[in-house]
Length: 334
Image (cartoon, rainbow, N blue to C red; front, side, top):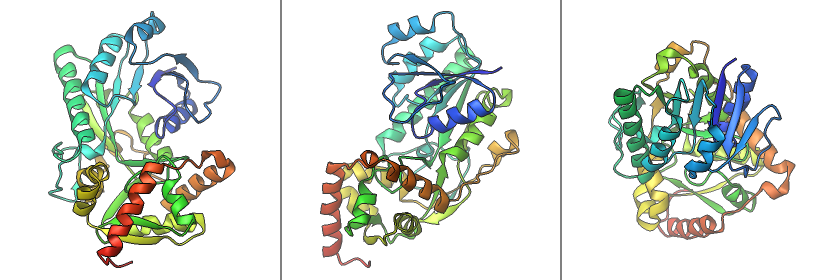
């Protein structure tokens, strides 16, 4: 029986991967601080520890080995370097969860494959993921560390309503329900790929323990491509309220809110389609089966089951108020 350790395990993507691992018959262990907001299956063993405290984690891991270690929470090279010291010699495969935002920006060609260069001058988050990938593959070359890189794109699950900014809360949904304006970049017609975490997990599990995945990079995305306006309208349909949409260019948003702008210019401002052929060669049964209109209804139902889940980001709300007012003065079409 394959043994897998998730560093993290309760997040947007990793909880779905946990559930898929259990369905596949894996022995599943989580290593985290025990602060996740979503319940975890009782079959999962949880090691309580902060991965940023290597001495404590080393004690927890003493005499333990795993077939797969999946790292969902390394965001800068220092994080990853510390983890590699802990897990070298303890796993047959170290899977690093990177990001599809690493692919070259501006986009030179709209169809993205794993051979598309990794270069992102706009977003520090992506730059750090690139640096982590380089560190990991250096360890693969120089120390024979059995490594695999997986690059999710915009992946959502219960608790996450996807927008060009701010998914892990109810802020934009709340604006729609209250009849307040929401903001899209450009004219709302750029194309985007959204992936339900359950679909991502099917591809992820297929790569776990696969010898041909070692030393390789894969992205895992859905095949459904939608415009941002359609995405916003589909969220509105799930909420039962038509969204009031205003527009600014990505450059204007970046000029007035650098934090939001980085994620646009470094990722979501471009029309892209992901070619999953490489994944499907190793995982021939993989296909995305959750269409967005169904997936987003699941998310809305999850929020409605417990009102306390509807967390509002006050700072994001204020920023959107300011940008929407600017969009009105620019007299963009609605």
